Length: 353
Ligand SMILES: Cc1cc2nc3c(=O)[nH]c(=O)nc-3n(C[C@H](O)[C@H](O)[C@H](O)COP(=O)(O)OP(=O)(O)OC[C@H]3O[C@@H](n4cnc5c(N)ncnc54)[C@H](O)[C@@H]3O)c2cc1C
Image (tube, rainbow, N blue to C red; front, side):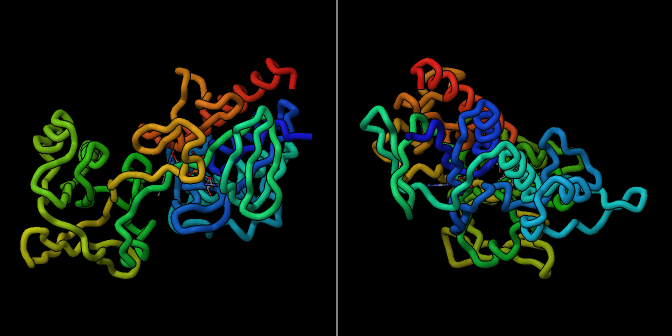
């Protein structure tokens, strides 16, 4: 018997789809992926520390709740409780990325969702009954597929950058810019396109923002004119032209600066900053879907109907960042994960499957 719903991916989109599909008695299976650089089970949030903007999780003693909700055999995966603020003798912090994702996974498991720790390397959509092809194991027949494989942030690829992730290096200003770690500090945004300008403007508009350096390898921005003007005229944004980052500098705990190399001569300089936001684009995890589903010019899956998660192939739906090169947030991914499950449910009902 074919599965009713196979979900590929285990970020907010995948788990939300799984929770909705399971509660609709569709017995979904989630392929959660395996560990690779820049991609892990539980998705992109598993790479970050505190998540302050996911509704429903105000600061508090988050761990007490999590330990009561998440099954004990996965407590090993919970990060240490952040040291710092206490209230009434209790830890007081925003939910951490891994904690939030473990809660989503637990919620799905509570409704009987089956989870397979494997990657899907191909899909076969030539017949009415679709198939997903795992890296190991036999192909799995299914009536519907929900692709929720996300998009990974591109980084510069420096060892020092890796060493300071979550200690002042980030790839998401909207997510992390307001964290105490970055507050009132001079910061650098790396890149020259629309998203780099957006990140820099976002940081520059925060309360108590210090100087935001926009570091670009060329002497003009790639961003659209209107966006570029926004950065060039912003009183808090200072352009650093013709420069690339050769090293992230720090004191072992936090970022303290960047070593920059000129792209026009042999000079180098140090820029004193308390954080670096890399804004050089994202790579959607769609390589295994080439020539199977319609994608946009950046490789994101294209929805074929407004406000629906339908793709170019009937019965195949896409949710989360893999189909969204604009918002890329946990809450929007969870939202479209819900939509994909409802779309799959309707498709199955319409086809008496
Ligand atoms: C450093 C950082 C901090 C962030 N902070 C915030 C924040 O504070 N608030 C916020 O709202 N957003 C934040 N984001 C953005 C947020 O993480 C993403 O928008 C969200 O995780 C996208 O969810 P998703 O389910 O679409 O994809 P992802 O979370 O990327 O999950 C995709 C999943 O698919 C799996 N996968 C990929 N390919 C395959 C395959 N072939 N087979 C099987 N599995 C596969 C991956 O392993 C992964 O588990 C942050 C992102 C980063 C990088």
